[in-house]
Image (tube, rainbow, N blue to C red; front, side, top):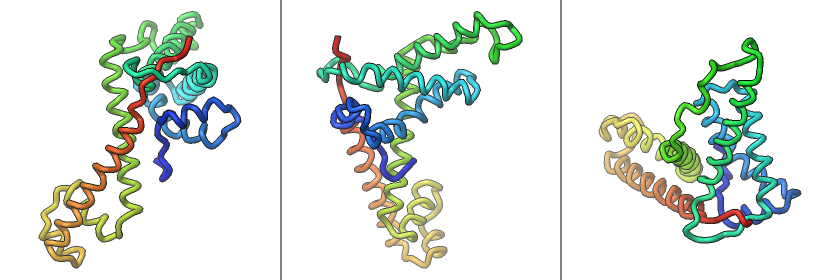
Amino acid sequence: MTDHHPVTSPRLLLQLRDLGDQEAWNRFVQLYAPLILGFCRRHKLQDADAWDITQEVFASVCAAIGRFDYTPARGKFRSWLLTVTRRKLTDHFRRLERCPEAWRPVAPGEGLASPDFEAQLVSWEDDYRQEMLDWAAHRLRGEVTERTWRAFVATACKGRPSQEVALELGMTVGAVHIAKCRSLTRLRQLVASAETQTDLLFKPAR
């Protein structure tokens, strides 16, 4: 993840209406390309095909973005994006069914491994939150000293004893404990802030 992690705020989506706003589109792609690619790869697409699907999804966003109308209780933007991705993937497998057998990269009938949208949405949201966590950790590392970061990783992430880490880093046990607690608190703040901004409710305008 890059340091300037993009979030799906209403402001960003409004900026996307200007198709010439390269910075806004770059932020959008940085956020969602890994999500779409991961979804495609889980359905056994080769990288080239996964990238093609991703570009098709972004083309659909580009075509629809000018009609978005933000309305509470209509559903998250990411839910709509998953729907678009599923449709593009289904279209891809339908095209394969019309191809000669020798040209099929997957076995006939594989298609979408799980047609259950709700189950896929849970996985989709889990992947998104992992992206958020990775970003928050990257931001945290840029905000704290190297020794604080190492103490946090060793104790909070790897579960090593504070006494052992303190000896290794030349810190007191108390300092290691403080580094861990403050880092965890800041990590939660970063994730919570980003999650609040990304909880966008909308409906595509008719």
